Length: 336
Ligand code: ATP
Ligand code: LTN
Image 1 (cartoon, rainbow, N blue to C red):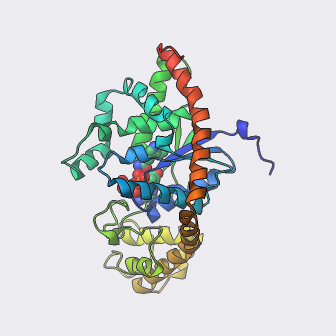
Image 2 (cartoon, rainbow, N blue to C red):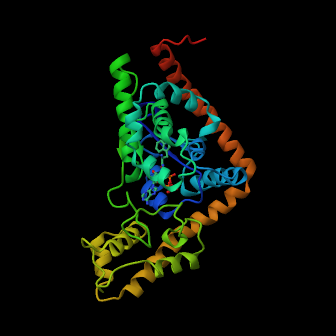
Image 3 (spheres, rainbow, N blue to C red):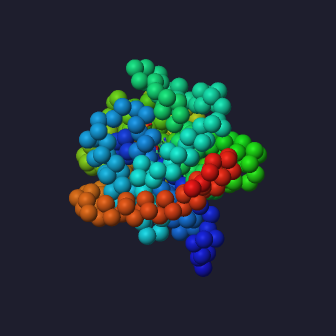
């Protein structure tokens, strides 16, 4: 199929926080989609380090995690020649547009965000203004690049709704300025569940490391985590309401093996949970192996990573500066 010229392709934007090593949830819910979209969209992807300051970070660890996140994105298949890949704090327009948007987002709307409520519950000692303001920075990320689509996991739907409301509100006051962004959430893997509490999403900040698989976990660790995954007291490997643990494992297995649920159910017909869980663990470990090898090589090459993030920031600044100036003019600021 003939490809469209780059400038006619719609823009995609997404970001990921460098708060630790990515989980299988991040990978299947978001990153695989990021990679897939690169041929049909102009993609802009960011390691959103400013967002991670909303929860206290150890500075040395944050620097390491930021570089490792960049290496992981490259290892997953983000191509810096095709897509714009950058570190959020390197592009000053993000913080600047956030301030303007802050003045157009009602306090009540920010207060209704479930992530704010969850994270303030988890960190009662540090309920800071940044945590509250987090979705305004996310809206700025997206709107600066005039993105039409935003690939995310299902947990980000509410934040994206806030970005959409903000774009619509601004456009209503000042005339057409921002496209209204659409979420792109994968149907099956949009919410990969915890291996220990399969009614909760898999999260890299879970206090129990058995609940999540990190994409850099060693094969034996991955297999062990799947072997101890919580299922139910039945015996049949079938995708059915109420079988949250089994459903989650089936979804993960199908995603890494490229199968339909029916094919996977047929494969495990008459087999026990023990054999099923072991096979899922092996399949995930095998699927992640090449990614882990690429990540290790990339993470060791600091010169390449530096070149990559500097070039990315330059491109991101050039695009986002145009939007910021347009916004400044519309609201009545003098653009020097
Ligand atoms: P934390 O759990 O520490 O808040 P996180 O794992 O949600 O962090 P983010 O950087 O906030 O990581 O998310 C990056 C992307 O991964 C987002 O698009 C998010 O929707 C997606 N994502 C996160 N967890 C899952 C999951 N369990 N299933 C599917 N997608 C997920
Ligand atoms: N809030 C997102 C990360 C994020 C993001 C964005 C996602 C920050 N800015 C812009 C999409 C578009 C999260 O995954 N927790």
